[in-house]
Length: 351
Image (cartoon, rainbow, N blue to C red; front, side, top):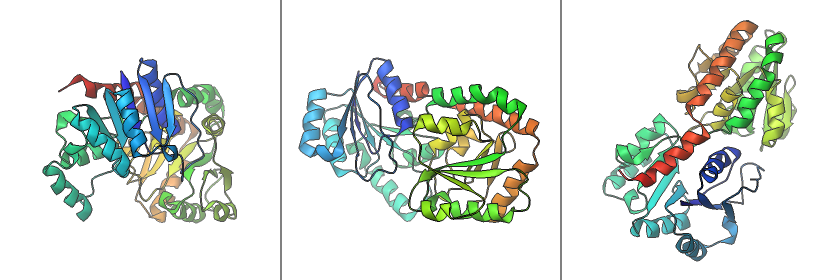
């Protein structure tokens, strides 16, 4: 089995699925964006995986690569790279399996409705045979874009569960002895992550925090501004192995995003056994959060709603938090690198 990826930015969770595909015997060739990256993540060398920097290969080079590899499956991340689309169309014309992967949700915007009309006339079918989506909201979008239900597969993204499950198991005894009272955010320091809402909520409960702390880990334009705020701890972006050590000292994961089509980070911290506090627009919440069972949801952009939710966590007993921790860990098993890889491989099996 040969698989060609025409990809955006490779992340740790991307590699989790790619490594599983490699372990199954697949040969992977991955063209990836290497400039204007969102994070400093560096992909490790992996058996049966060859990486090609997008900045060093043009359309002709990708066409030649596709001809040489003759992929059984081609994966294209989204529809924003015109050169990728050109390669996809050529492979589609050859009768090969070409899969578009996306995490966009359907909101019924004018632009999405226009896209839906165009796709009913076969626009996307010129390029792709299947859609690979992250969850139920993305499935709805794929069907509206003209993909038949049997041509849509799930589990586009999976956290690297080995790392985060190990963190959960290694910290379980320590957390049973003394549960850590620390809220944790991990992500880009960007307004889209709702950090203004989080800081406003944190300030609103200044006199009610008891011994709870708030730690922020990431990188981005707001880094210096966040570092000047009293009452929080700000740390720079970490590679996965470093991040795992921070997880062991955390008691609840908070993500206040105002726009988050999916959010693999939710899967990661559910796997690590953290109760979740999530804004109600986060796509991954549909799979990994059951409000009241392993965490809570709050109204997006509403600092008062988030403050009330943080109070619920602070008021919970350590025993209740441990129960939520175990629930998050169990829910994280709904998607794995194995199910992600299997869904992709299924596209080559025919209808």
